[in-house]
Image (cartoon, rainbow, N blue to C red; front, side, top):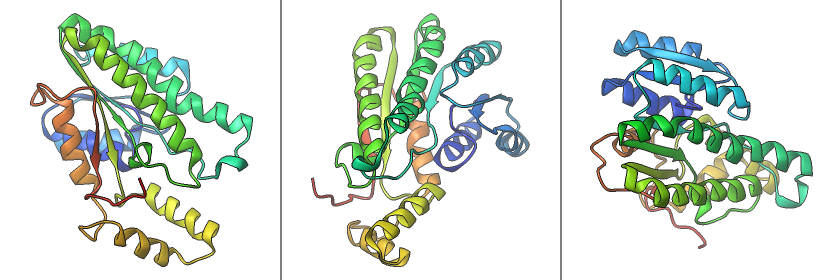
Length: 247
């Protein structure tokens, strides 16, 4: 599981551990998360420190997963890119973000899928965003590059389906994490309004009138990553409380 030391990634890792899965966690600093999950749920948890953009991480993940019997489920996640409008993004920022959000996840996919092919089954899930379907201003990197990964995974679903491998993306709307707080802070600065006003405006677009929870997202993700999911593939599924968007 990549990007699993905090936020949605950690919530998914913990939910999978509750269901008895042994884990390989990767992030820049995965040890504390691994220790917490191991202590609470008694499963085996290996760690691979490093950025998903580092080519050595994919190879290490494959090695550790192989030692645990082979990968049956793969979560692709990473830290969010800078929250900036399109005209303010430099070539270097585009390149760096592409490495983290597209090249890195696809490299990990290529490293782990052969173990699933050998087993004749597997599940892959990417943490995406509702803005892939309804782009928001001010987050051009996320809008663009998450869409690239979603379409790559759709292609993989078409190609790997005959081998029993199901691939999906699960797109959160407003879920109560540090990332959404960072997003709200950035929008408040861009619009020159208070953070609470940003949050109020967001809640007005959600019929349930509340943010989602990491735990709720994780339960949905765990279904898609487990053998309980026997037919859902090639989809981007929204966890957004029926969020009303401009699109």
